[in-house]
Length: 99
Image (cartoon, rainbow, N blue to C red; front, side, top):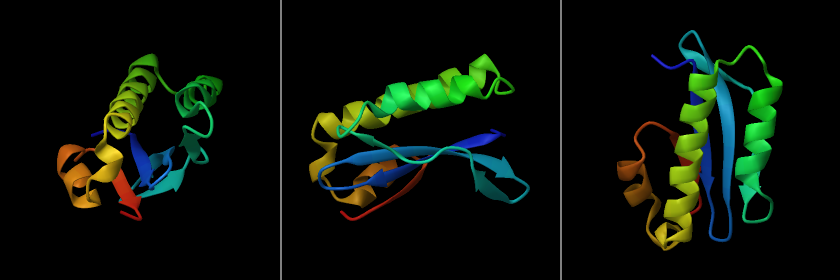
């Protein structure tokens, strides 16, 4: 079981990414939301995760790979699909949004 979960806010003009730490049966925010394409969300997340030196490299890489998949999918037209489609594709993230 993962110690972290990628949270995704799926919007019409942005996709926002954040990381929560799994605590018991719930989660606790580890980062704020980083918005793409408004900012370089991937780079901001990478910097934030690297500043938490207690997070092992494998976990950082896994979270950044998930973020890459989300951003690429959003850029390739996923932003125009109903959120239900994204939820079916990305089952290992917590997805919310306005579409």
